[in-house]
Amino acid sequence: MPDASDGRRLVTSDTFVSFADVSVTYGSGAGRVPALENISLDFAAGDFVCVVGPSGCGKTTLMQALAGFLKPSTGTVSIDGRPVDGPGVDRGVVFQQPALFPWLTVAGNAGFGPMLRGESRRDRAGTVEDHLRMVGLWDFRDRYPYELSGGMQQRLAIVRALVNKPKILLMDEPFGALDALTREKMQEELHAVWRRTGMTVLLITHSVEEAVYLGTDVVVMSPRPGRIIERIAAPFARRESAGCSRDTKSLPAFVALRERVLSLIWQTAGT
Image 1: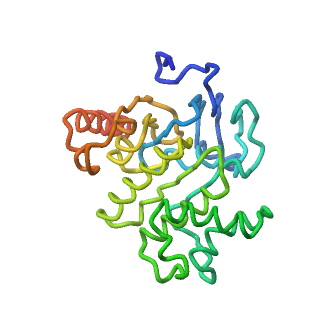
Image 2: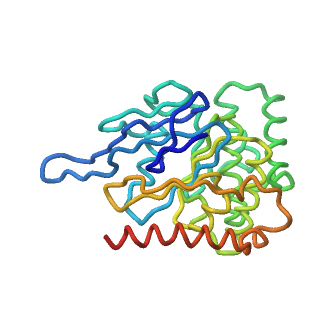
């Protein structure tokens, strides 16, 4: 898909998600705070788009607009040609904290969404088993969230989003609270799930390395009010893995792209 000269992707027949001149302002009068300014961004089904930028640049606001949690002050957000006018089952959201139900088992948490949708007990059991096996949690199906590690809890949160069969998975710093080793492992597992399902993903992260490793595209945002500085295609997500994530992250091309993105963030943060 072609790119515009300013880094924004041109809208074509392949466009699945589109932000068209989106601005978001909080408050009014003297308390008015512009969070996003004239965001135009689109991507295709199956893309894994990672958004990075300094703290307070509007990354989470961008995700919330796509989730339907807030309405843009100006501009429109659309999915598959239809304007977003509120939350919907076509979007699954994973936050930094898993927000699991402590009184439900792993299987109960995973099956909560299908139960609310009226899925039969038999179908629900099959859906839950398939997804828990996919992320390595089937053997823990009768455990409760407090019996799981942080990484396992986050895997369960991802399953809770996936079982509802969303068109898009939205992730806001999902690994930010994890230790470095667990975070690395979760990146590998998320990458494997994405390759297996072909799902469209929008991930918000402060980790440039994470964005370059997971993303098919890395979107760099400016300090508030958030604007798109540059959109960079990243080739590593679709690369056939030759081993663990460290193998990819040690490639000279990976290091060069990571440093390029970091440089963009540093340059704009200092302006």
